[in-house]
Amino acid sequence: MAVANTPQQGIVALDLEGVLVPEIWIAVADSTGIEALRRTTRDEPDYDILMRGRIQLLNQHGLTMSRISAIIAGLEPLPGALEFLDTLRERTQVIILSDTFEQFGRPFMGLLNWPTLLCHRLIVQDDRIVDYELRQVDQKRHAVNALRSLNFRVAAAGDSYNDVAMLLAADEGFLFRAPDNVKREFNQFKALESYDDLLEHLSRALKL
Image 1 (cartoon, one colour):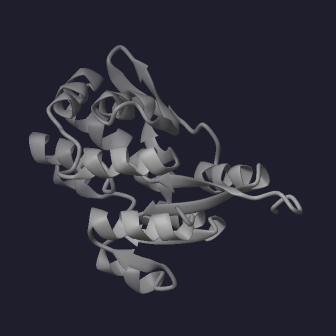
Image 2 (spheres, helix red, strand yellow):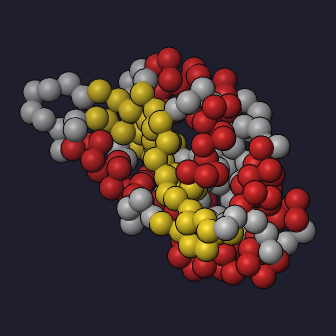
């Protein structure tokens, strides 16, 4: 994909939830006591099945967008995430590719010094989440392929089933704090647990 005789610049693609910030749906489950909302992309590979189930649960329990927003407002980035991201962005460009939604992700962007976030959108009517709108099907893979077509060398990191296509599309991909089931199924990716190790491997992958 690289343009002949043209040096490649590097760029990093990161997942958001579980990598830089807490799993939002788990936080909602913990706050509301709706245990079924603890199911995430770490457990369910089919994103549409996962989201349809979530929306059904929200309606069953009368959980509003305002209530969820209040829960998100009480969350912080994971310990060490901001320092890691700041250091990484001093070395190279970073894009966050997430299957979260604008309404969920935007509050965290201010806490993370406003990195670029590509994600989806919730459809909200009368303070109720009634549907969701994908920015693009398989957006993580398409985004990485687009970056590579622009002659970027891409290093990527994520933790869930929905990150696998992104990791496969990247020049180098890493699992970060992934659950054992994901690490077992996709053991071709190096599994890392600390921000220091992730920074080192991303830097090495992009020759920073």
